[in-house]
Image 1 (cartoon, rainbow, N blue to C red):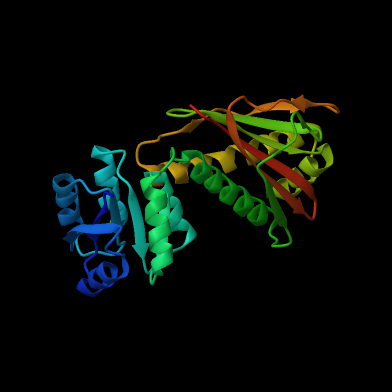
Image 2 (image 1 turned 180 degrees about the vertical axis):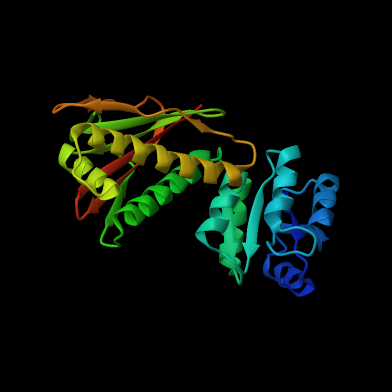
Length: 281
């Protein structure tokens, strides 16, 4: 049975030695070691390993930049990040680059073996999840900051009702560029009016409530997509101006072949629903 060939990119000789000792010889072959990002890039294209185990912190470039340069030339590269640091920002950046596997040191033998096997049998990159995460983060930050309160709770769902039954006011923003989709922000007239009053510091008219919903949608989508684009380096998604729908009975059908994440915000002034739909293309 052919062994899985591994390239280790890590500037620590000790970490390299630990990995060589940890991975079972009967299943894996360490085909190369690299102590810097540039060396890792050169050895990847010479050795053509099945999987790269990549550190984050290195002297010449970080592991994400090294991975990005490899993936630019070989989009099928299978890279496992193994780092002492692991947080939401790093894992999101990794996913947007095309990396789905991220372990934190010290990883157990079982974790390493399982993750490498997953990398070898990789399915298509779930690019949309990282964009949805950034939109969700932008939404939660904006709601809490605008209302000047932490007294908000957020819940998520990947299986929203079809059709979506609007509470009264709906703002819809399209996503265009290398991929497409849309973001729907929904609330009652009363909640939208109270939000507008908070921002304007005066009584809000019905027009103010509509304009306020468009503003929330525009800011949330603009910040979320921009932040994701800065990380993604090449996706370059864009947003369209908000379209507003208003009525007591609105039913909005889901897009076909889409991946959805819905976030419900319960706030002191009422609830908001943000539904993010990304098309599989």
